[in-house]
Image (cartoon, rainbow, N blue to C red; front, side, top):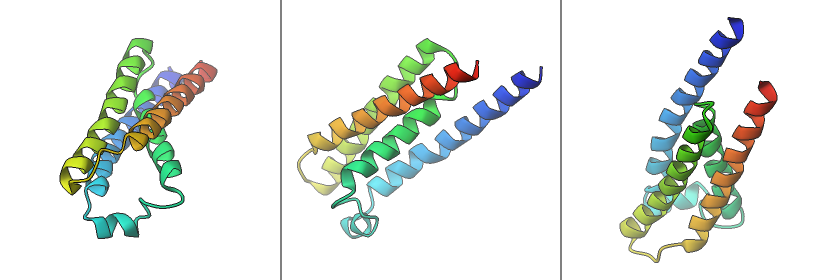
Length: 124
């Protein structure tokens, strides 16, 4: 019974985290260019930032459920979210769609989902 309560608390934590993180990414992604530069969204660590952020989002989403089917669905949902963010930036800034960023986001989603799968299988 204790493990069920802890599992529910953990699930609730990751749901709350995801509910905060997803809108925060949208807001930060659509800052005017000066704000994006201040957040170091361009430059040396740009790609690493994408992998870490989208890996974190996928991990948080993946930890909201134990169902393999739901995790696969969430994997595609977070990957689509990453594409949507890049598309929104393209439309907002009237710049070319950054396909490299889309692929890097997808790599982060893959890694985050994989870590969520491995983390939950070691707890069982």
